[in-house]
Structure formats: C-alpha cells, structure tokens
Image (cartoon, rainbow, N blue to C red; front, side, top):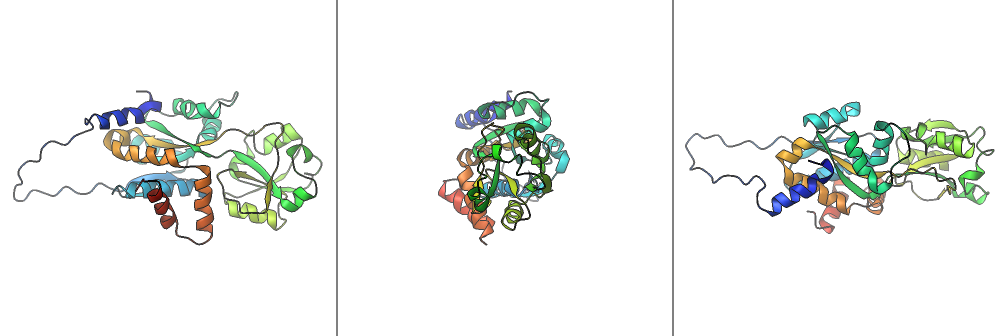
Length: 297
C-alpha cells in the first residue's frame, strides 16, 4: 500500500464497518481471566520544545479517546523504534527530514514534502501530514537593531563581523541556516547553540547575540523583528506525524484520531499553546481545552 494513502484506506475501512469487528462474545466461564488493558502507547519526542509540545498533544488526543500514552526520547534510533513498533508515532518536520535523509538536490515544494519523505523512510513507517504547521526557519533581530537600519538579510554582511548568532542545532548545517547566510549573503557569525526558543530570545534581548534563528512554529515572545529574505534561502518545513505501520494495523482508530488532530493543528494554535504555557498555564489544560474546542475530545 502507498503509505501516503494509508489514512484514507483506514477511513474507508471504518466507514464500511469492516475494521476488525470483534466476534460475538462467548458465554463467560468461571475462572476466565479478564483481558488486561493495553500497555501505554509511546510517542517519540525530541529535546526541541515545539516538537515536545506536539508529542504531548498527541498524548492528550489519545487520552481523550481512552488510550493511555506517554512520551519517550528515542534519539537517533527513532526510525528503528517506529519500525519495530516500540514507538507508535512521532511528530517531526518534513523539510528537516528531507535534509537529513535525502541525497541533496533541489528541495521539494511544501505540498510534495510529505510524500517525498514517505519514500525516504523505511516501509514500516507511514506519514500523516500536519501541513497547517509551518516549521521553516526565519532570522530575527531586536526591534532596536531593526530601527538602526538592519531590516533585511542583504544588509548583514559587514554588520555580522564579530557577532554571535543564537541558533538551534539544525541551523548549523542547513542551507537556510548559517551556511546559507554565508553563501547567499556573505555573512559569518559565531554560533551559540540552544534548542530553547526562550533562551534564544533572551540572548537577543540581553545583547549576548545579535541575530537568532527560530522556526515559525517556535514562540519567541515580543519585541523581535523578522529580517526579509530577498534571496529566498528559506526552505519549506511543514510538520508531519510519523506513524508505525504496526499501529496502523493494530489500532487504526487511534491513527485516525491522530490524523483528525493533525488536520486541525495550525502554526497559530501551536504558538498560542506555547505562549500560555510560558505564562504559567498547565500544558495538559491548554491542550485539552483546544482539543475540546475543536471537537476532538
């Protein structure tokens, strides 16, 4: 089966009433063991806060349907964990996956990325699109820096000398990261790496960094100015949910729940979640409220 179409296939199966309908119950017998509840489903996550929050959202989405789940870090073994069914699903970004798994060449269009990534993954891993979440990189400075005249990336070549860029790890090697600033704009920075968007924003506002990179789905607070990108180095990076094909076979209703959530998730909603959590709200409360408001709980 084409792994890009597995959700449609599962939907049709459920609509037809043929999706693993249990047989009639047999009369009970004394001493018959009560079936145990399934083990909690593990959702893979990363240290990047935005991915971690999307993983939590998957957990809350499943909990709303009575399925216990939790998160775990599988590190570089994420694809093997999905293939073996140790991990049920994991949120990710399609452009980032393409950059790490592909063999170079021109980046696919945003609408094609989920399908291209599906072809790069092992056959035991399927892809659900969450295209409403834009994880592409943007470069920002403080409003004060913008007011002083730095408003576009083609103004930073000389200005960059001796300055620090606060970046996530992915920006160190990607064509829309530090290498792109050097090749497309002639700007070189000293990298200060941190996965926390809050720490990158703080590095800017305290003067420890002159420029910073954020995913568009990262909450970076206020008082920052996005630099225009006239040479268009930005790469499309929509979100996806990677799903173990074993889960597709064993629990198609749970996969459909993930697909329903992914279809409604947007960049704006994800930024709102992060702003509320950074402000002290409970992540579970924020995510559960959104699921309820969207008819997903």
